[in-house]
Amino acid sequence: MENDNFDVIIIGGSYAGLSAGMALGRSLRNVLIIDSGKPCNEQTPHSHNFLTQDGKTPQEISKEARRQVEKYNSVQFDDDIVVSAKKATKGFEVKTLSGKRFKSKKLVIATGIRDVKPDIPGFNECWGISVLHCPYCHGFEVKNETTGIIANGDFAFEFSKMIIHWTKDLSLFTNGKSELTEDQIRQLTRKNIQINENKIDQLEHTNGKIKNILFKDGSKHPLKAIYAKVPFEQNLNVSDDLGVELTEFGHIKTDPFYKTNVFGVYACGDNSSMMRSVANAVGSGNTVGAMVNKELIEEEF
Image (cartoon, one colour):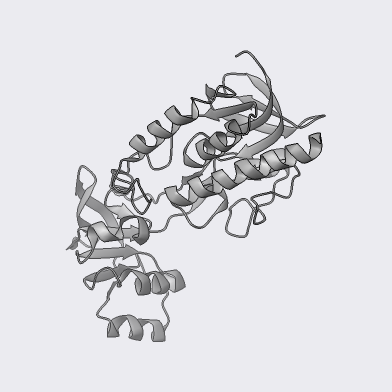
């Protein structure tokens, strides 16, 4: 690579990172985008609820996005994995898995998140295909189908209230003893939402398309779709390395302009938002690009 000093390093080259890169490239900034090529939605067959891109595959969208960003000569790419990002004497220093080191005045973290999926055989294979995280992203495609939710407690109750808007054929699987209150059970029962406390053994599927939930007692329940919220982890240890604060939910904490508590460090996309979608990632990246350029202009004037 011709240069190891940049105005901005963007860690993550998916939707948020590419969007920030385009804004900064158009702002004549010297930018490096470092990306591993492993987006969290890589096995999701179609992306939805994104104006002008509805129904396209995630790969189609990201491939075209990168092609467009590559037109800006001041934006460079490195297909690698960032293993650390730290403050330097002036700005920041980033180290990659292959041992390369780069420096920049500003840092944009667009690393997405890593889903921590439960140890249920078949769950991982169905994730993003028929085991879904978001009704706004995928609910229309499975509307009125036989649908399940894997969840428990207050979250299960609130999620059930939402999902029944898309289908009236809904069952809640608590995967063990229910933690719902008596009042919550009454309300769900009144809406004909079945509550099943059996322990889940595995998900029976064909190429990621769910057919049945199989339970440890030998019974099963046919389904066409399942909603589930799984825990997540940050892909980069920003807390220890940079001192970036996280929210109580584990997202990177930012202000309305996507600034973190560390001056010069911004975050955008899924790693810093509960609104997990391609459209939101692109929008936040676009704003970050403008905000970073404005900060650089103020410092240079």
